[in-house]
Length: 115
Image (cartoon, rainbow, N blue to C red):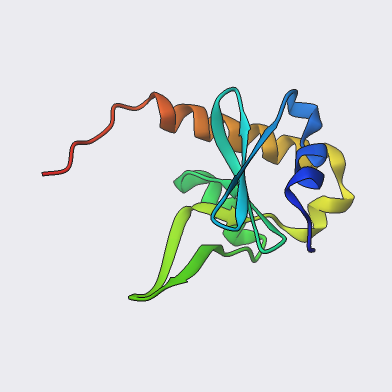
């Protein structure tokens, strides 16, 4: 399911305006000022909280991960878009709306200060 950031933006058009911001060889997809999806190496990942992560897990999806010099790092807040959704636009839109809501809720929470 290789896809570019601009194509991803088109996929999520039902949300309304989706902006693409290139970053680290991939792209962040933003709606209402918050990043709800990420494209890396042609793969789409959607923002998830603990509840949404269970739905992704049930689909056989995995969280986003990448390799650093210190080893592999996993970001459990972004999960690979289940491929079947590419052929189910209404369900894809529902998953995207849920991810956008998760992103808005995360942005609204007070930031924790690091010691």
